[in-house]
Each structure stands twice: as structure tokens, then as C-alpha cells.
Amino acid sequence: MNEFRLSKRLETVASFIPKGAVLADIGSDHAYLPCYACLHGYASKAIAGEVADGPFRLAQQQVEKSGLSHLISVRKGDGLSILASGEVDCITIAGMGGALIARILGDGKEKLAGVKRLILQPNIGAELVRRWLLDHGWELVAERILKEDGQIYEVLVAEPGAPRRPYRHLEAELLLGPFLRRENSEVFREKWKREIENWKRIIADLTAKGQSEAAKRKKRELERKVQLVEEAL
Image 1 (cartoon, helix red, strand yellow):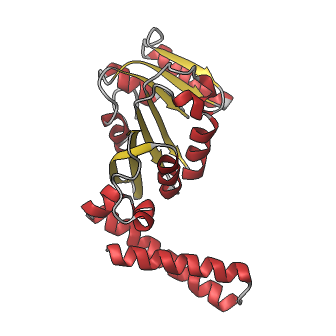
Image 2 (tube, helix red, strand yellow):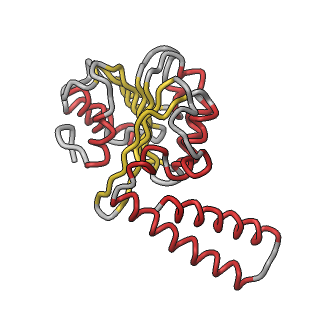
């Protein structure tokens, strides 16, 4: 992977960047995504944000090597704290857990003024991201699910709008994704069959270990998830 060729996962993220966007890529790592976006005409300019020293320096080196220092600003800081309000109109956050993505958006929500699109790729916990978007006025406008190197990834795209519009069955679709549930692709089915198997193992384990109140709650929660997913499949 480099500034000219991204992973399938990041290429999918990049495909949703509106042409000519001013992009912020949060947790940019090597800054491959903003470099690729600027070189391929997705973004007119970009900000690459990193919280850790090592990735921050790697991002700086990559931007310089790509000859893009005039278009990409590399900044060190936590989440959206690196941005000024109204500075960008598109934000990408890829390769983190859903809880962390929701925390970054929540902590920096005042920096979202003027942002027209969020492109979010949680490695786990996509339902937490959907819930945050729903609760904060962001409408899910597209989703993709893909498999790469044995891993399954979801990409969520949101814009300011009517947060409930894409949902027909809120409980199930916060978990599964409204667009992904309706598409019901082979990769989607593979992901959720795996999850059902895992949940049933945990339910059996909880049943065998005893019935504390916490175990009962967890068991009920997982049984409900199994029911929702089996109905969708």
C-alpha cells in the first residue's frame, strides 16, 4: 500500500470523498489516504491528524515524499482537536473501534459545523457509530461491506439531514445497517453467521457458569441479537 495504491478497505473509504472536498483524515497513520485523495482528485487539500509521535512523523515523511506539502497539513493532536471550526467539509475516520470513533465525534462535535460528509470505517462496533449519528442529527446515506485478507469491514457515510430516514426497523438496523440489511450480500451474510456462532458459544458458556444478574442480562442481550440477525438472514 502507498499513496498511489490503497488497500481495498481504504479505497472504498476514498471512493466516497466528494470531488474537490477539503478533507480531514483523523488517525491518518502513514497519511496514505489523504495523499491518495489529493493525487487522484478526490480532495483539493487535506489535513492528516495523528495523536501518536511515531505515526505523526511517518505521516510527515509520506507527505513530503509525495510532494504534497503544499496541499496536506500534518497535525498532531487528539481527534478533531486539530481542526478549526469550518476548516474542512469532509472527515474520514478509518480503522478504529466504533466506541472510539463515537468518542472522537462526540468530543469534537463543535468542529463539525460546516462538515458536509462523514466517512467512517469502524473495525468493530459499527452499531455504536450508527447510534451516535442517529442521536446527533446525521443521516446515514450509504453503507458498504467488504472482505479483505479474511477480515470483514463496514464503511458508513453520513451527512447532516434526517437521521431516522434510512431506518425501517430501528433496533435491527442499528445493529446490521439499514442499507446493508436490505442489500443482504454474501459478505454481509458471512459476517453475521460468524457473529451468531460466536454469540451462541458465549450464551452456552454463560448458561454453564451460573446465573448472576450480570450473566442473565448479558445472556438476554445476546439472545435478542441472535433473534434479530436470524430474522434478517
